Image (cartoon, rainbow, N blue to C red; front, side, top):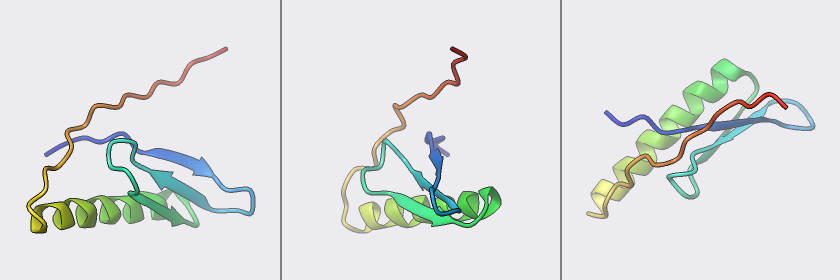
Length: 70
């Protein structure tokens, strides 16, 4: 099991978007945090499945994220 960093952003018109820096193009949207968590996990699973089907390497997680008080 790999742990990928997922960046979640609140959309201006409501809802959320999410992307995975280590998996270019792996994105999803949802109306709530719970929904975006479910949707981005599904997107990651499908992304990796497609890479494996095409016999391409699956990128290892390398990104890190921190919350920094300024």
